[in-house]
Length: 192
Length: 154
Image 1 (cartoon, each protein chain N blue to C red):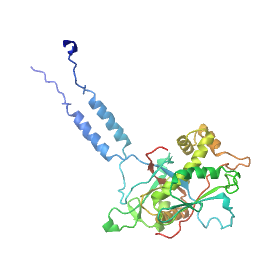
Image 2: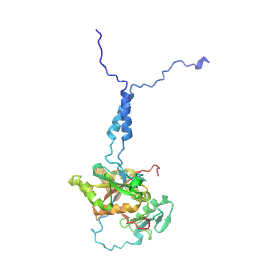
Image 3: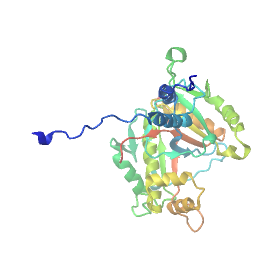
Image 4: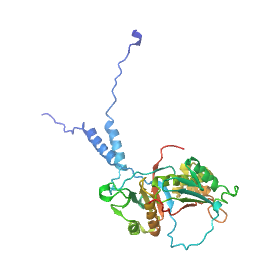
C-alpha cells in the first residue's frame, strides 16, 4: 500500500507574498506629520488694544508682496542666502549697533505678507526666520540644529529639558532670555 | 597559456531558498507601516519644502485641514478651497469644525490639539490668513504647516 504524503505545494508561496507586498507597497502612505510649527496669537477681542510703542530699532521687518518679491528692512532683496545671518546678527545685537536691537527679549522679527503671496514663498521665508532662532538655541545648548528641534518637541526627559533651558536661557526674573519673537502680521490686500 | 586556465568551475547561482523569507519581512514591514487613507483628498497637494521642521509626537492630537485648488476644476472652479474630512468648507465653518474635532479628543488633552495645515504650493496667503483668523477665534492656536524635507544640505 502506497503511503501518500499529504503536502501543500509551496512553490507559489513566494509569488503570493510578492503579490501582497506589491499591494502594500502601492497603497502605503507614510504619514507625514512634520512641518513648521507656530503658535497663533490669541483672538483679537481677547486682549484689549493697547498702544505698545515698539522702537524702530527693535523691529526687523520682512515683507513679501503679491508677486513674491522680498523687502527686508525697507530694502529689496533678491538673494535670500544672507537673510538668516542678518536675522541672527539682529537678534544677538544686544545694543552694540545703535541701529539694531537692544536685546533679544525686545527684538521682534516682523513678517508681513500680502494676500497674493504664494504659500511656497511664505514657507520659504518662515523657514529662514525659524532657522535663525533654532541655530542660536542649538549653538547655546551645544547641539546641532536638528538635535535641537528633536529635543524641543519632546521635553519629557530631564536631559532634554536641561538642554532646552540652556538653549533658550533664563533671566533672573524668570523670563526667557531669547524668546522667539516672531510676529506674523495680517496680510495686506493688494493681490487677491 | 594553460597557466591562466580556470582551475575550478565556480557555481554561479544565487541561493534563492531565503527569498520568501526576505519577501515576507518586507511584506510585514509594509503591512505594519501602512495607513489606509480614510478620506480622499480632493484638492491639489503640492506640499512646499522646508528645512527647519519639527515633528509632532502625538499623532492622535493632530487634525488635518487641506487647502488647495480643487482637483475637479470643471466642477468646483479654480479658486483654492478648504477641505476638512470629506467635505469642502468655508472659513466661517471652521469654528464649528474645530469644536467638533476637539470633542473627539479626551478631555484632558483638548487644549493640546494641533491643526496641521496641508497647503498647496500655489495657494495664496489670503485664504490661509482667513483660516488662521478663524482658528484664532476657535482658540485652536497650535498650528503646523506641513512641509517636506528640502533636499540640499546647507
